[in-house]
Amino acid sequence: MTQEAIAVLGAGSWGTAMAIMMARSGHPVTLWGHDPEHIQQLRTDQSNRTFLPGTDFPANLLVTDDLEKTVSSHTFLMLAVPSHAFRETLLKCKPHLQPDTLITWITKGFETNTGLLAHEVVLDTLGDNTPIALISGPSFALEVAEDLPTAVVVASPDINIATHVADTIRASNFLAFPSNNIASAEIGGSMKNILAIAAGISDGLGYGANARAALITLGLNEMVQLGNVYGCSESSFLGLAGVGDLVLTCTDDKSRNRRLGLQLGKGKKVDEAKQTIGQEVEGIHAAREVYAICKKWSLDMPICIQTYRILYEGLSPEVAVRYLLGRAQLAEPQLD
Image (cartoon, rainbow, N blue to C red; front, side):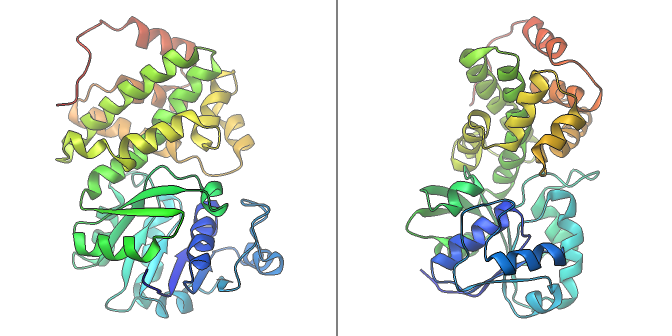
């Protein structure tokens, strides 16, 4: 494993978990956060008690709120900020980047209002020659922080960059597989959040395991359909960053998106459900962007569309489900 100084930008649960994991593996890691009070609390506690209680920081994990110094002193950056803050963070980093800085990210979701994938945002902001890689797959932050076995994909247009990043972050209980299917990995990582909300709604309504399995399977077909717009092959969604992440997020209550859906299915309003989660729920933003893409390309993606209408138009979950069940039954969608 290559030892490398790594800066993680974003001190939420995911950024902190990755910082802890990589520091345990021997990398000198700097964790940056935008809130000075939060960073001071992390420094005092030597842990992130808000998001990852009970997990102490390794000695080689430093925390800071100094973005300029952090960016200018590292050539390996890992962004772990919410999708709506992704471009803003890149723009703040841009004046301080070294010429050979590698940009990686664990952020999932389409950019708000533009619908751009994260790698498109990076290239639009920093230029086409920027070395980039996405880290995605079935991975809950808490389990990574607890050093439980996890496997992810590192995707980049350049397989050599993907391989370098995978070699760098790989650890005894953290497997990393290089891939050049970056668009499909990003689509999978975003859409699974929408589908997890839908699965949570179904379970909240008490519809059981049969309905959940159907939602996951038909949701995978919607994921593939959206991928066709971006030139992705069907098979590129059958790995860790596609079906793997989809199954995890739809079936386990560590998922914030699934928990939001559960509460909606039990009758809570969207704002009330969001408040009880207390953290970013990326599927809410993704649903709006995917809905816009569906309208633009006339895509038949009923699960995503009905989830959007529940989140943004006040449609009741019961009505949405009745619509889905009442659709004309065509041949079962198949992956080619």
